[in-house]
Amino acid sequence: MKSNDSNLEDQVFRLPHRDCARIALTLIDSLDPGKDEDVSELWLDEAERRLAAYDTGQTEVQEAEQALSDIERQLK
Image 1: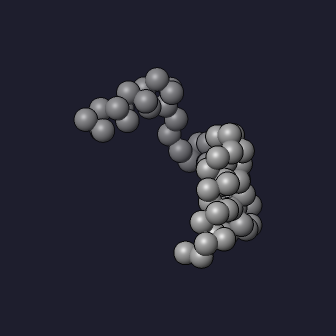
Image 2 (image 1 turned 45 degrees about the vertical axis):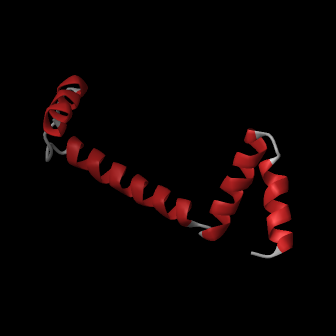
């Protein structure tokens, strides 16, 4: 690593945690811009598909408490 890079890291690590976290998130976002929009669109499509299946009776429904209980039982 170059000396300048090391100095920059030292400066960042001396920042308050909130500022350091903001910089980290900005750097992560810069590595794969647009990825979140793609994921959001896919989740929206999935939610619409599930709602349509529910509306037409093509899917079974379950109370949230029962669903969580089933998940907990499966994880044991």
